[in-house]
Length: 92
Image 1: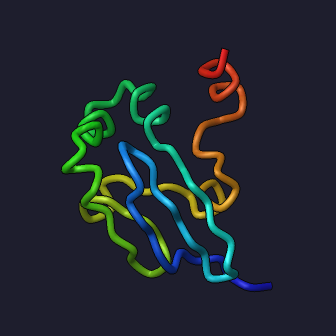
Image 2 (image 1 turned 180 degrees about the vertical axis):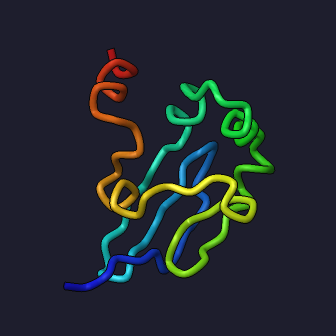
């Protein structure tokens, strides 16, 4: 079984990134719903575009500010950074 890692991240617009994985799969992920629905100030600060754009790839993970913000790789791979119930609530 191959370990999934991020190989490339491209900023698209607003809070949307295109993430490419080592198996060739690519996801366009909008982080805005996650950020806006957080109640934690350490997450809300990433609504600042300049801070949001300061991501990096370390050991195949997408991180911000020395692991201040990081998402499970599988959630990024499946484009499910919000729990299903929460994403349905936001959509309605």
